[in-house]
Image (cartoon, rainbow, N blue to C red; front, side, top):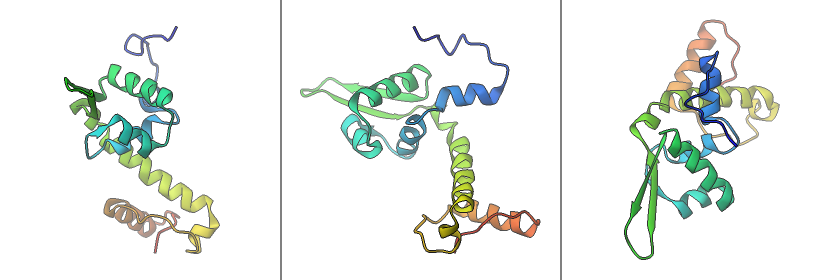
Length: 144
């Protein structure tokens, strides 16, 4: 039986955060729900995960108050998912993870540094962060 995350005592704030949004699929789900509401099937296609796993992950995110589930009394039934106001507070955390991941990916893949692999352009704040780090003497690869 899975223990209740609300009652679990953490000794580290990072551990609490990772416990809430960590795992293989949760960050991907949250990124897809970042800017819009999605129906279950649409979200399943976007995340490319099985129905069972997506249902389990959404239930956990809903239980933790991160995702809001709206059920419409229609035939056939319609269910939509969106970030709750509490879930929207994760935006800066997700953006920081994206920024770090992009820099790590480019650093770890020499083909990206050479410009031969296609990588999405970083968000303007990521590019500014990379530029500020470079001018401060921190060695971070940049995108061209």
